[in-house]
Amino acid sequence: MARQTFQAAHLELRHKTYFAVLYVPTDIRHLIGKTKFTRSTQTGDRRIAEQRANAFAISWKSEISRARHEAPDPLLSEAMDLNLNLRRKDLTPGTVEEIIEDRTAEIKKTISPLAAMEFELIATGKKRILSSLIPEWKANETARGLAQKTIDQMVCDVTLLTNAFPTANLLTSQNTIIWIKAIAVGNDLSASSVTRIIGFCRNFFRYLQSLDEVERNSQNPFSIPDEYKKSKKLNAKGKNKVDSWLPFNEDNVITLYNEALKKKDKKLADLIKIGAYTGARIEEICSLKCSNISLERSCFNIIDAKTNAGIRTPPIHSKILDCIAQLLKESKDGYLLSGLTFNKYGDRSNAIGKRFGRMKTDLEFGPSHVFHSIRKTLVTKLENSGTTENVAADIVGHEKPRITYGLYSGGASLEVMREAIERVSYCF
Image (tube, rainbow, N blue to C red; front, top):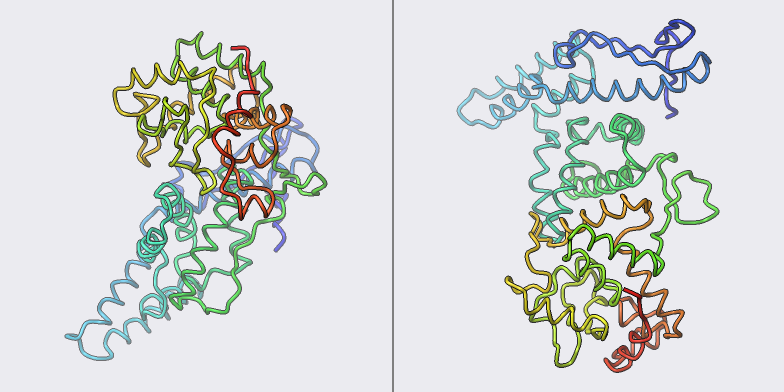
């Protein structure tokens, strides 16, 4: 369904400038705290004003919708109470059915046919309230082995859906596309956030199919609006092109390292130097235990990795061997980078990662440069030093690019990897 145009009646011309105006429904004004929304479109051009006002209106209507859903819904509560009574065995047969029938007719007459249908479906037990299914869906996804952080985000996103649609019969393509556009504008969501929410909602819909809350062969009604679709293709026509992270050059890495020392954040400086000479992910470095490091063999044993290929034994570069030895000596908690705190998901890299993010932003690096960019710096240096792709993949923990090495090789030896990594150097 095409987005509804903003009615001209909602534009007010004040001193040659158009203002967008939307009156708050009387039944929700006590929750919103105002009688109307108003905002300048900052233009006297009516066509441009209508376009801007349209976006404002969607956001305001989303706020009104959220306020309504956050308020107690007496009809839903009444329907659930009637359903509980319907299943009681101590009541006269037919009594509750008659009450449901009478109340449904009354609601249809005084409120709306849609409200009456929702009431009747819940009261008779033909449909369950979607929000009541979230706990068991959460348990189902947890049993699949998903990370707790992912589970929490899934529940948060799907709760947005169940707040808007009490029962599954309302989940149509027409309804869901209007809904996702409204919350995207109302909450100023990025294309990535919209993509994530739609993905989790599709997952929830498949779960509803498994429960027969919706027909098992029905089409999944969730799709990403064209204006929020992402693409990594350089010639893609969509406006949400996904730019890959960019590598830092050597001077950038040195600047970051020196800035960390200037801020007297030696732990962050050590993290940057280790990343520069290993290409390890920030989570891999922060989760390295002292027991995972062998000074005798001069190598790391990375066992807490993002992928199976990430589980590896890369060499310790001679340029950081003294640094590693000192960190091992100073460790008080069994970790190479001692003293880092865990977040609620057991991640030790969260706080120091944010410090890195703030520092690189202060140095005017954009969003395409992140800590992972240092990993790309090392890979670039390995390539320029003549290292073969399969050896570089073993050092940084990537899948092998070719079937022979990828499926049949046991991996490059520590000596071969050491010879390759020693060809890399920085002027720290």
